[in-house]
Image 1 (tube, rainbow, N blue to C red):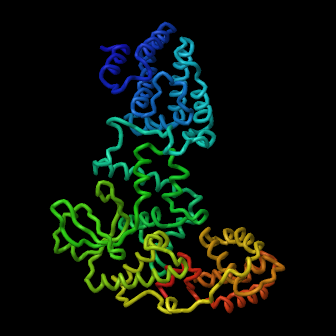
Image 2: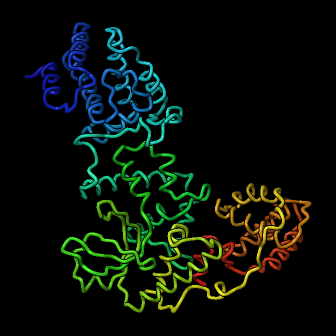
Image 3: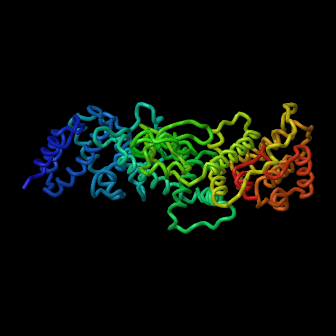
Length: 514
């Protein structure tokens, strides 16, 4: 039967690819000292297992700590434990396991410092304190993560060798994406995102439909595709994927970060297959931009796929499509009608954003395009876009007068309290600014004008209008003053329901169902 020293010998001879950071003679010297101190074989094996796990991590990361192990930053020990849970069979992420991990490493480092092999163990000691000294495990405490450098910087944590992600292997990519999507789902089901989740669900499902049950996989796949890529969070107007990258990206495993970067490059696309290149590839055409690109053959007959219209998020790396895409069967006439209808919607979008491209339209209103395709293909409707908004002539708001800043600041403060998004705040401020260019305004009570702007903005974009009574009561102002200023805004700006100049995401979606 092999003893622990035989296991150490086998490990260093057969399992380590690169030059080890923890040298074999260091480990053997440490274990022999523990044996002299009375540790039996079982205890020595326990110590050795944790040391072996740590060396496997050091062997897998491209950060080279050979001859400078004491320089490994405290924050990386959390990543090491995280890596162990995914790569060491039977290793469970728990406070108890983390404390054992740190206790053994601290004991080893103290031995190495006493032997003058390491200079200190300050970073390890800090990691043990911040990660595992409390009542629960904190792999990535804020105190350690504040100093994380940009991912493109020299300290980026990247796995190498056989444990690196092979982005050319569809099976590996698929498994990594699935793992990442699970983390994304768990992250955004936290209580702090409850308002966003319900708002996104309402927008995606539409105002007339009943939300399907949890067993309706197609619905929920489509919803998560929309939520992660296209929805804009209330408090910062970022897509959930972009927010996740900013606030959680440094906590991911390197291969997951790599895939997250790829997913962030995805674009919403509506396309059809124009021709079969060969048995492996087909040529696709973007319905709106007429851009051509190739994707893997869907392995269906050309007679079948030529009738299909595809929409969803795709990204290309070595021309591999890996994300969720919906397909519907359409006639050439329906395909043309969809293109015409969405082209009219882009004209509406360009009233608000004159320089907006198709990409800008997709980035802000991909959900409008989804609903339009569904409505035209399933509800037997000739069109869904309000024609009157495209042909209107709007008052020209020239830059004549600075908009009183006190109202701007009040809007910034009040609107989030009523559930409006950061994007809503920008549009409402634009409404106030435009009004001030058309007439000279004397502001005595900023709250009254801000309330009128909020009330008017709500009338334009929502079925569930915020009552003027509620705003007046909250701000201790006159309801009559709100109505009076609302009338001034409507008359001077010639406002109408779903006005394109100040149309938000809710308003655009709701306008399709009127």
